[in-house]
Length: 456
Ligand code: ARG
Image (cartoon, rainbow, N blue to C red; front, side, top):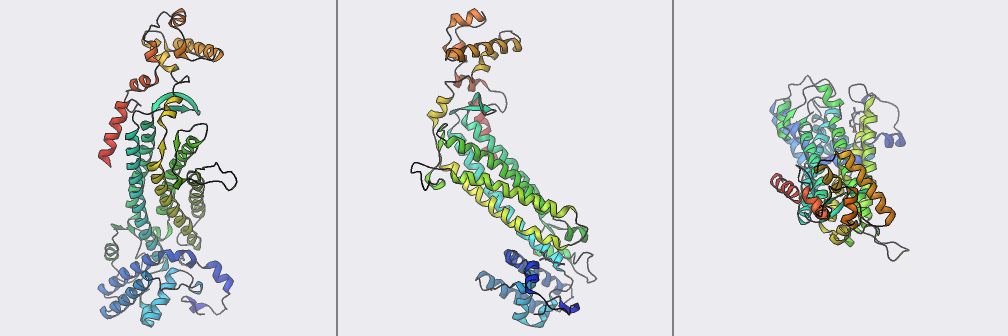
């Protein structure tokens, strides 16, 4: 079969080599964008007089037919036509005859493919932004239900200080808000048109790049044709933002998995987001959370794959760049699904308030309260720390807790300790007292939630 670029070749094609070089198996996902780009390009060719109005209309109509066929799933792509651009051009040829060959005037596949991907990512990133926003609103709603639910706060996965479960959920809200901002900010760099850069150097034809950019809804054009066809930093930025987002989701999933375990029993996920075991009848596994944690690895892989592809490439286009697509598509699918699953999982999970609360009672997470109490009464904090540490050691030997120590024993250790100590040691009071800005007190968490609701 003759290639669209076959003029200077007289050797024969080998199907297995063609298959290795082809990208149509995956870049057919860009068919819609490819036709849109061609529609804008041919309109511009007509308006600038590069093609006659009749030629432009004829090609335009052919492309519109292809658009309809695509929508009805009537297009069949072939490996012989290598990639989405050549497939569409060949189909246009079948549709309107040799005049189709004028479409590629003043254009190269190099600016064409970059344009397709900018259009694609602009749409997908906008959809991802909306999904993050929805998940943020789910988090705020859950947090609001649990402002006064106590849960152990951990460091080193050891009970540290009791906190509000709403505060814990709001921590993720804020991480997701930064993800939201990062994706939003990246849009201004995705929203640029490479079209008209041609192969690398621009073109001798009197094209109008602003016109095509406008037509495609881009807010500007790349200022340098070489840059426009060479760089994939807009995809890398997407993969990098996605990696950060997935890292946040993955940490959250890790916590959900722990919280579902028999040892914690802090939450229960609905059946929809859980699966059973083929051998152990009692099992209810948090598979979806585990999968999101697992899929974070492939998103990182996609980022590192493309970073590695890019690092040694001389300007301008190199075929290596064809490898930029599968990781991008895969990441879009992974991030979109993960966000939807997270939102559903958190929205429907049962929080076992009593278990969380109970877990803050029989522990030493009130040790800081006692140290702060002594420091408040003038004892240097380091000394207070030492005294409380000794008391904790005694308790662990006696099998009891700070709140079980009789007042007389406390006063034997330090006359500064008075009867009000038992209220101070209470977990709920400990949370309420942490009223510094951004702290876990109910008042501060309420404030965070009010502000979050305003910004959503
Ligand atoms: N399929 C190619 C890609 O995805 C399109 C660009 C081809 N350009 C070229 N000069 N061979 O990168």
